[in-house]
Length: 85
Image 1 (cartoon, rainbow, N blue to C red):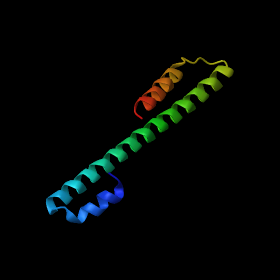
Image 2 (cartoon, one colour):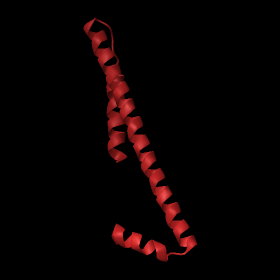
Image 3 (tube, rainbow, N blue to C red):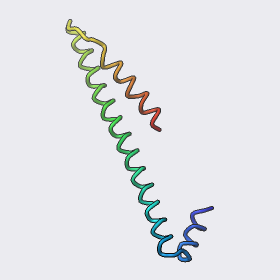
Image 4 (cartoon, rainbow, N blue to C red):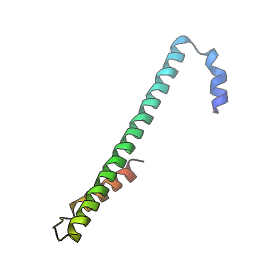
């Protein structure tokens, strides 16, 4: 069914049916917001890990030690982001 067909049918619905449609649309919008928030959080986490990797590389060039942990965390964040699409 196309969006045009759905919109054409809306005036024929009862009040309770229109409320059910409205409730469903609001639920879908909330899911979209949750997905966007998850992606934004994953992006911010990956950016933070990038900064940590850069800092670790700077420390290694200066002779400091780096555990390599941010790289593993970054891989996990990217894997989680791929799975959540």
